[in-house]
Length: 228
Image (cartoon, rainbow, N blue to C red):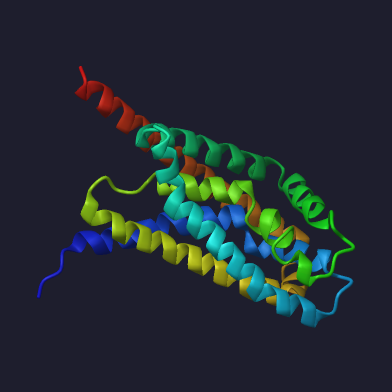
């Protein structure tokens, strides 16, 4: 039995596109440091108990945005090309903010997570530790922008979403691992090390955003020329 190389290529390409983009915006390494700080008054067992719950919530939020976000916008008449341009601009703008001032991004996430400081740790698992701290509007918009990169051909759509969904699963797994071991991350990497990594990943995220914009512009130009 022979298999077409296209689905495999689409699967791998989708994973390689989605993983660095989602890793850059979620930043499980840097987020683990803030997670540890926000739960510093709780025992280590509490952080370990919350880590899988937050990872599971994050997985479903990102997966839902990835699988349904693009189709919802298309339902409202937004073309695939326009969605790619808008999504790419959102990704690039957020990447620029992360690249220029990662400290402000960290402080904003910490402020969002510390608002219900008096709540029990278990009550904080979804809000604010998952939403908006781990997977906030930025991560959701990136996932929707990634969904706009789905192939037009029907036989390539499923491998694309399988590869992107695998990237979401890996990100959720990393959230689980790094949140669970947040004390070790803090001792090994430190705040400055996390910020250096954030800047490197933010630059990669900006490149991905520009690539999405370019593919959107190409689609719009092709559509315009086809109607002439």
